[in-house]
Length: 196
Image (cartoon, rainbow, N blue to C red):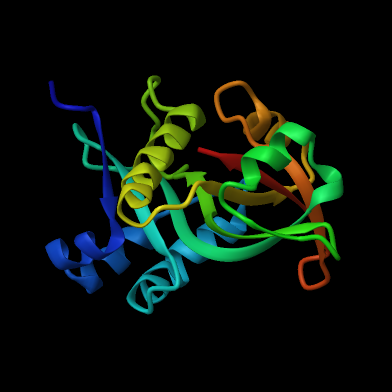
């Protein structure tokens, strides 16, 4: 049975319809709840993909052809303070990380979910939601993992109760490990990780 939703790599989309056509389609993308995502999709996603800095994926409704949601993936070296982790998490993390006893920290190469959001410019089907978008994200990550290895995924989100509840719920299973403050944005970001 054909899925109602397909995931398309931005580079494949450029190959299929051309860069100019994709720029036109993305000009309608709207994410008023997170203008950073909207700005990235409209102004940076194509260039980042061409430079291989990050790859954006579009989740497309098979019936309407609309872009429902997006996520962008990259990889990044990450230092994680061992003091904030449970013994169980430290044991699991040690499979993928180098431990530095002096600093009591783990250094890992992790997959970063750099952008994650829906397109408010289109009517969303009642069967489409954030949980399903995260499933699509991890389906893509599992393909990458099979090819190159790795097992840690992380993301950052604003210090927002609803967002933190979403990322830490029983479906998504992310765990807070740190935070950072952006002087440029004047925003505190919470950093979360998940092993898979």
